[in-house]
Structure formats: structure tokens, C-alpha cells
Amino acid sequence: MLNVNCEEITNAYLVPRHKFTYAIGCFEKKITIYSQQIRAFNLAYFLIKEKKVNKDAEIAIIGGGISGITAAAAFSSRGFRVTLFEKSNQLMSLQRGETNRFIHPGIYDWPLEYSIEELTDLPFLNWNAEMSNDVVSQLDDGFKKFSQLIKINLSGNVKSIIEKGDHVVLELDRISNNRFSYPIVIYAGGFGLEKDNLKQLSNSYWRCESLHQENLGKSKTIIVVGTGDGGLIDCQRAVIENFDHEKVVNSIINNTEFKKLSEKVYELEKGIYSISDPKAQAEKLWEIYENLLIPNDLAEFIAAHKRKDIDKVILYGKYKSPLSLRTSLLNRIVIYILLYKSLIEYRDEEMTKRLADELKKDENVIIIERCGTEEVWRKFFQYGVDFEKQLIEN
Image (cartoon, rainbow, N blue to C red; front, side, top):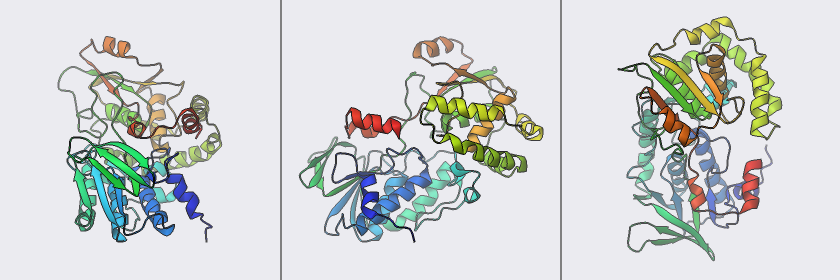
């Protein structure tokens, strides 16, 4: 049996320099919907086990996304009173209605054996791998039995979180009597919205758009800025004809040659996790991939589906290579094959607003910015230089 120190685990969720405010996944590297649900369940379990909460008190959860409703349901299932604050008009508003993105619980861990399991294994609020809106529908069904027990405050935009003595005060926007006091507060801010440094009005990753559809006018040049999973996936959408995220993922992971290549790369990459500098990491990853023998059948399998209505796809990133351990191995290999077959170009160049504005003078150029999300938690929690340095190092 594992020797688990419950207090150490609960302290890992505690917001630094706070005593009663916890956060789900704000400071983690691996952020997926499934991993956030697991964190929510773990936090609820250990807070209850360590008696950090009692049933006479009410717990406040900030954020009505998937991790927030999971935490709310976990506490509610054990008889605790919960108030859930969500600034939007609906729960899970980020993924709700989105039909382009395929969500799979284990794909981030490909090619490990369990990564192909399409059904989550949680106490409740389970879901099967589906397109985004379908996953939300599954979670809606699972949350129904808890929603009547939870006080849900929609359009409840929390303005500030301040600890005073032995309780936490929340201040909300646009309502009278807008201050509420709780003994425990859990921040479940979720993924957040993309940064818009270039002011190009790119759609959010979680909003429906037509990148994968054939252009009705002239051929386009697609420029994708950012080398996270969002950027790598949008490069695939721009290159592969009739791109269907679910079908593409399933066809790739069921390809024998791709599986063998993934297993080899997985072993080769193990030695890179000790490299903390992202620039050095990207260069070392590129060395590994350059020395790979890409099976011709696999390369042709991907290249055979190249779109004819796109002139070129250009990926912009900060380092000499677009590869990073922060992305899924599956996306890293696919993007390398696209580069290997000259189906996309890569430029290690900063995309400034000035350059973007110049490029956009050509009406046949489309710029998509995928440079990560705004760290909304920063407006609530201030740490100072030491903690900022710790975040970078970790």
C-alpha cells in the first residue's frame, strides 16, 4: 500500500501564502480535462480526510468549468454544503457547443497502454471520448443529481479573494451585498481564454470556426503562432483535407507503424525530462527526431490527405524547434512528419503585432494565435519575485 502523507498533498493544493484558499491545477504543467477532474477529486478527498473542512461550514468553489463542477459534486456527495460561482451564464461554457475539438481522456499519455482507454474511471461524472460538446452533454447528465444540492451562482464574477483571520472573503461584481465569507475557498479557474497579443481577433481554441473546411475563394496562406498543443493541432487542421479530429486521432493511434515509432520516441525522450530550459529542451528534442527513420508508408499515409486549397501553412515559434515536452507526443510526431514532408514551414521568429499587421495586408493570409491562455489567477493571487522564479523552475 502506498505511504501517502495527506497533509503534504493538501498543502500542495494550497495557494502559497494562504491558509484557507486552494487551487486546482493553476500551477501544474499537465492540464487536461481528465487530469483536472482527478485533481478535484483528490483535493476533496484529502481535505475531508484531514478534517480541514467540517459539515457545518459552507465551501465556496470559484469556476463552473469541468474541474469546478467535479469538485462541487465531490463535496456534495459527502454531505457538504457548496456554493459554486461561475461568471458565465452556463456551466462548462468554454467547451459547450464546440464541435471541432475531440477530447480524449488519455491521449496526452500516448503511447502507454492505458492511454487508448476512451472511458474515464472516476467515482462519478465519467465521460467517453467524444467531440467537445458531446462530452459536455455527458457531464450535464452526470451532474443533474448533484445540481439540486449545490447553490449555483451563475453570472457570479468574483472580483477579489481576500483572507481575513480564519475565513476568506469573496467580492463579486455588479450585485448589491456583494461580499461573502467562507471558511474554505477552492479556485477552479480552468483553462482560461487565449492571449490576444496580436489583436488579430483569432477565435478561441474552444470556439467553432471553419479552418478545416475548404476555402470558398482563393487559396489561403495559414499562419499559426504558438507551438503548444492548440497550435500543433491547428496546423494539422490547416493541412489535412476534411480534417475530423476524432477520425484523425483514431486512424493514427490504430496505425501499427505509428505505434512502433511512438514507442521508440517515448523511450528516447525519457532523458530530456531532466532539461528544464525550454530552449535547450526544444533543441535536444529536434536532434532526436532528426535521427529518426520515418517509415515511408506512415509519411505517405499522412501526406496523402494534403489539402489543395491551401498555398502554405507556416508555424511560428520561439525556439529553433517547435517541439516541447509540454505537448502530447502524438502531436509532436505528427507535426514533425508534416515538416519532414515539407507540408508546413517552421520559423523560429517572434510574431510581433507590426509583422502580423503587415502580413494581414494580404487578404489571403489568415493568422491564428495560439500562445497560451491568460493566467486569470494572477489577478487574485500575488506572490512576488521568489514565487515567480519557482514557477519557472518547476
